[in-house]
Length: 409
Image 1 (tube, rainbow, N blue to C red):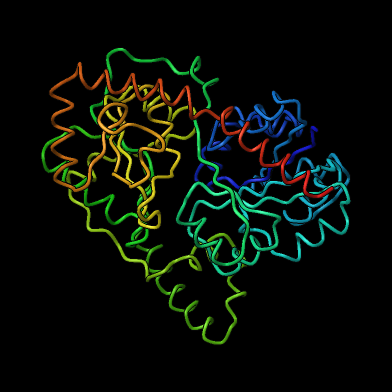
Image 2: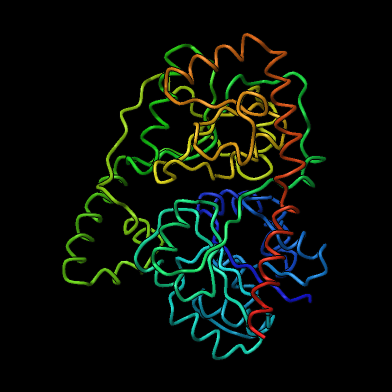
């Protein structure tokens, strides 16, 4: 029983800016060419579920909701005229007529949009939500309107289940077909590498900053690829957060669903604040961003890859960095979580730490014992390529979908 599958996602604005600034000839491309160029960057999940679900005999498609230039080309090619991103996507769903609609990013949608899809696109039998990040009450209502939700986090699964929402565990992964595009550097250029974000807040990245500051204080050679939030933007977000709290008192928080920025503010559990970063930290930051395949290349040239979950993850390991660092063959150093053995054997396939001091101690030991470090890295990569590829996850998702489709009969 095969099916037609459509996944829709949203990309980080910083990545889209990076992409379009580097593709000056993009305006000459048609929709398929434009989409393929975007997907070739291997950002996030890329089109890895499409590739691997197709291997299983299905007919899978991808859409990128907030790639406005791309979506405008589709609208023009389909004589749609000027329309909102939601309206363009709705017409994409109508044209593709999928059996299964997978919302990797639920935040742009609400239960009314999902009802419209069900009512007007009769081919759609399943709508699947995805959750692996902080969410709002509006997101919760959208997720409740899905047939079920997949999540990488046991914590989120418990929270959703407590709200009466059917859930399945689906973990992040690594796409092994990218390895030929990544030149494995036998002589790494960086001791310790971090790629990611720094958003202030106990549920976000406060602890991440503390650990990195401690590593730098011990003179560990570390490179950081990030875009630090500007103080001026933090000030505006703090005011926006305070205003949002006032709106909630009068049940008017729906007004904050007008843009991606206000949607983020609605997810904050506390008022944003600015980090006080050391001179060493600022010197370690690389101004040029890396995304997708370029990020994976950067990790492949590092001895150690650093990972620290956001506070919202709680006691559960779940982010994609676990598999990206190990997938390219670098030694992963990550915060210990009670389910980490679901993925790797600590100190054999990866290295875990339970405190700032332990992270510093283990990082120093690894850098002083290169043979043992390389052995752990090789074991971690072997485990990821065996158990944690997107093909593995596609098989799991395919089983879930077929089970749920059978229940619809």
